Image 1 (cartoon, rainbow, N blue to C red):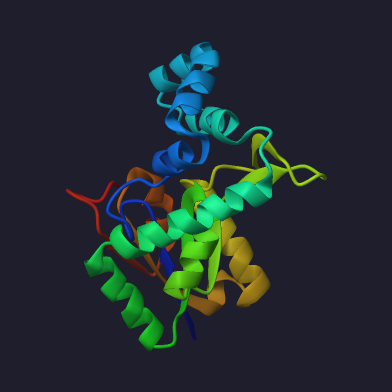
Image 2 (cartoon, rainbow, N blue to C red):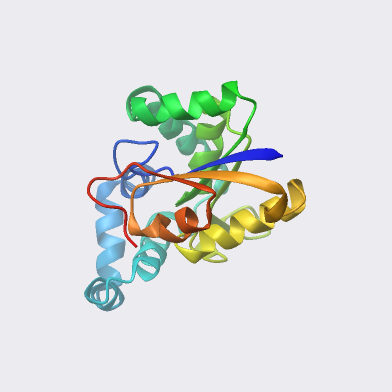
Length: 205
């Protein structure tokens, strides 16, 4: 049976969140704050409702709208290198390497932005990335919108199952070990054959 190891990234493979630091690095703190203030009503409502998807959408508009994908990819490569060198959790990376040494297929499944997880995956030697995508227009410019759904919660399971259908013969033909640290990983962990909770406290039910 094919063995798959599915790793969340922020707080699981990394010591802290990467989404906001990358948006700040990419757009600059001043621009990011100004553009978020332009969306004050939407941001306030999303924060009050604890709507992570809406907050991420607002952040993406603020940080990336109208910017060339090529420029952001350059920044993403540098950011990924920084995370790889100084921002990874050694204990979880050890588990990551154990899966690789056994010949398991290792996939990153994350709500972080795919644009910087791709270069991070290359540095780690991961086999693929399932993550939140930024929409790009025909001219190679970022629209500021997220393409499809934020890869969090049930969307992680949907994306992983789709990837397994295309690459491994479907969910029923594989053994999945999943790693996560937050409520956003709950569905992924529940779907796994072997769930590895690496967060603080008790795994959410």
